[in-house]
Image (tube, rainbow, N blue to C red; front, top):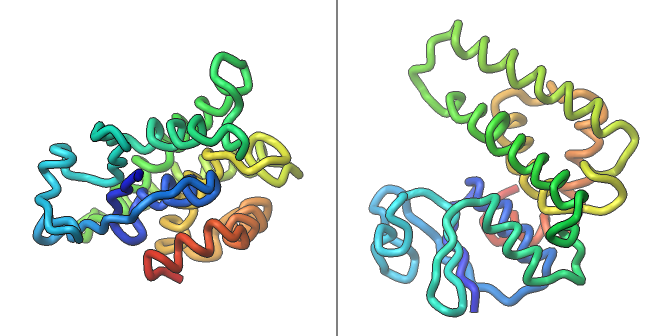
Length: 201
């Protein structure tokens, strides 16, 4: 069975949602960041020497450790769920374009916000840069329900995490299309189930 190593509220939420959308059997293994131990007693370094989540342990003992790779693996394990277009298609490349944008411009872009000693002027710079990125996403989204069209994909599951981070630091600052989009994501059964399983609201 697949095992997802996660921390509540961390970016491991993205593959967690993907696994539920894909309806694949899996086990959650919680990481305690303080002592670097997993809930099954193992030292996390023995699973993922990089030290951060997510990590997905596969049925054959291999481990995947990067979120964008993990969610694509999950999507390809459950093609009937249509969480990603087939490999080799231009639609798949477009999805990968979104995944990489979210990873590099938004996920990494929000990282400084967690620093307690971040200088005020730099915090303003980070805020303004991210606000510009969110304005771009709102324009790209238009009247579509999801990033790539009418169907929820793994890119939307990743955006969920980023929007949760932004909303934590800057509530009520999303452009109207993204506010509606964020609400739509939070209404999905997979998202509700993942948040409940991680003890989040």
